[in-house]
Length: 274
Image (tube, rainbow, N blue to C red; front, top):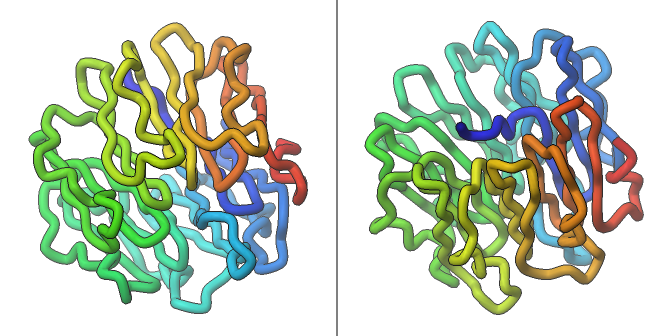
């Protein structure tokens, strides 16, 4: 059984958690208003815009999907990435750097925000069942288990045409990971950081791609991590009873079965204080 990743989201400098009562908690940097979620209600999924750590990055946004299929957004909106008030019939959301994607019940995809690298070119997508946003690329899973990707492909992060039998997908900065129905992951993109070194993983129920690292949950509630560990974001080997994970730019979140959260990595902006 796949884990539900919609309850946790990790951005560049903030983290978001969905409570069981449909309210939302956010911690970390709030310079752009990305943590102003205290009035949100009836939310069933959250997403946080993430971007790799650099001197010119940091501002972000947060998205929430409500039970009635409408969407909330707060935070940085320089490219219109928070202009989702008119969306209806949405079943899933994804947030990347400067953009937001929404999956409709029909299998079509909505997109707002920056699209100069082609990352919002999703109008032709059909029969989609899952979405993910990287920094400059977008990825989705079709109902037949195949994948689509659009946007920046300079490191091969969009080379997913041959992927089959997918259950989920996640996009990072320059890499993409997919989870097959047999519990084995696949990866493509930049291999310099080690974030694509997931070939030996087995019995996975969830994966999430951070900027330079990848984390995954096994069917036994253990967590595996690969890639950059310069802030300790991959120090998850002792985590137990985990049901979901979220990978940000330089931090990682894990949701236990009892509803508590564990964290690892960069906490310079309080993003690990969930």
